[in-house]
Amino acid sequence: MVCEFCVLFAQESRMNNLLITITLLCFSIGAAAQEKEIWACQQEAGTQLIWEDGRWKSFGVTDTQLLLTLNGANSAYKIGSIMIGLSCSEAFGNISCFSTYTGDRHIYFDPDSGRMGLSSLYGAVIKADTESVYTQIFNCTKF
Image (cartoon, rainbow, N blue to C red; front, top):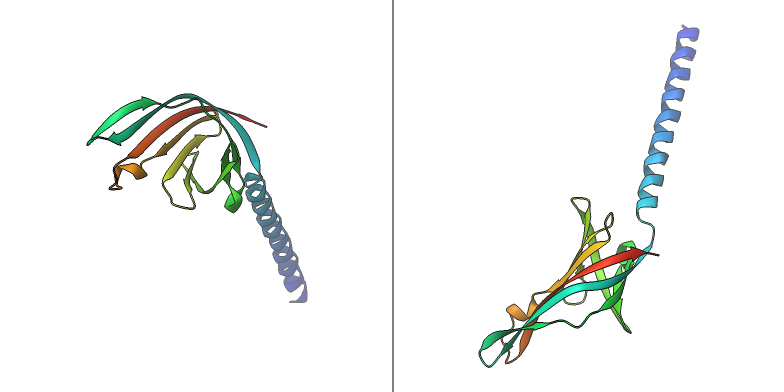
């Protein structure tokens, strides 16, 4: 009886060690996926619609450069001296982020290709004399 108990205990102990190892490995992979990443992004194209004189008018968007920081709850993008916080999640292998202050800006980013879209549709629902919506396409390079 004692020998059978010892054998079962040893097998259970090995199984527990294996489960602990697998669990630690999963946590380390998850932690690595959340490391801070900084991307330099250059605008390729952009367009803006401005509500003016009772109708939408189309304009080009001045070329823009921005820094995109992906860092969990501390994600943000920076244009010049303006820093905009982001709330990000993974979507189909890409990253989808909304600005945390008003939620009016949306970034959709493919980390494999470095391609990114930035848009704001807030102006489409605001009742004001002048409002705008815009979309921009960027190419980004990881630092």
